[in-house]
Image (tube, rainbow over all chains, first blue to last red; front, side):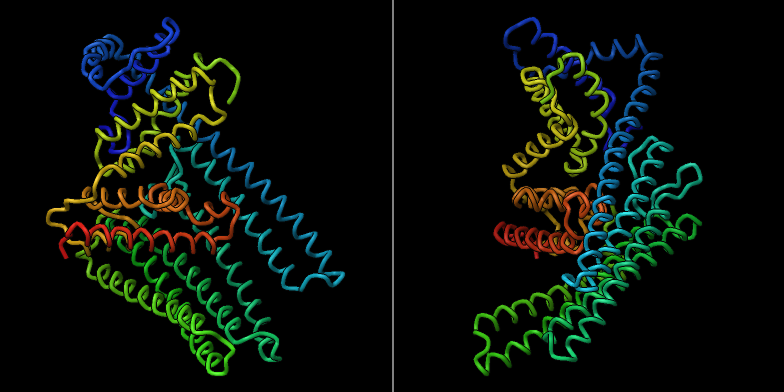
Length: 312
Length: 176
């Protein structure tokens, strides 16, 4: 049976016939006559006769097409692989350059840490692309990243990619923590305003939250593969995990926005900030409050399960 | 455009790309198979016409996807998102908030209508993330920006889409 996102075999053959005849006509005549949808119906008998006459050939052609699709996907993944390799090279060069600048004192120390993280991310990204290439070659299908995707020849590519995501998130969290420590020191000696410190805290919360979301997703994937959770429930839980993650990040962002607003109000009293600054800060705070309300509503709906759609 | 003769290669390109192209279009057609077939057919007829005159593009699959995307945008811009019958506006907005996951073809059509009204940069980003299920890291790598920036852009685009749909539903008297 044809799945929803696959072309119907009749349509596919008809269109192929239409494309080849259009080419032939354009070869024979200066301007081809228009091919309308009505010719679809008129052409169908021809297509069906061809199908009946060449059933064996069609099976072989089907296999051939599967191979061609696999080849196309492989070529796409190889393109991504080249891109990832170039990005790795750029990250390596950038890090070398940053280290030189740190050594002679024209760049701060934390810039090297950022470069190291970028390099680590590029290496992990390359690993992910290699995994995707392997998946395409083994399955002959496009890469699938959903928690309910099947395993391929006993390999769980979804889990393997999630584990790489986890390492990337961990690297980001470590960097955010270092950045927070730097901001804390700068704030203590009066080199940076409190808002920058709060932003660094919020950034750390956000990365930690991402890590937690990936951990939860890994646990969910393992449960799904072990058969302890149905595909529908796994989809619901995936949405729940994503919403909880968004809520944690939104709460941290609201905290920053609230404190920023309070600070601007104080500055306004001494003439160091304008009405417009205060209004902008208030608007930012209110829109984040609204985001949180919406996320809470969504979480409540997801927890109830009733309003949840089935997933794509 | 490449200079090699297109005629011999077009049927081969057709066989290589018809599956992925159809899947790309179908995911944006809210289960309407006829619409998907019309868009794929129109895309291919345009391809034959243009490629024969100008030669094959360097990346035929990307060319086909772009044309199909533009045809879909034109289609959705011409249609109205309503009537929605018994579906409440809140249900539509909840689907926008929930990452576009729905089994309702009506709601899906409203979302596609909304996406067609957004600037292409924003609609393509949302589509890449929600329909093609490309992870943020991959989008960030391809667009050479940080993951945080992609997340921020996604948030903004979703918010804009939500407001757009909200206004259209209110204007068309969607049930509350």
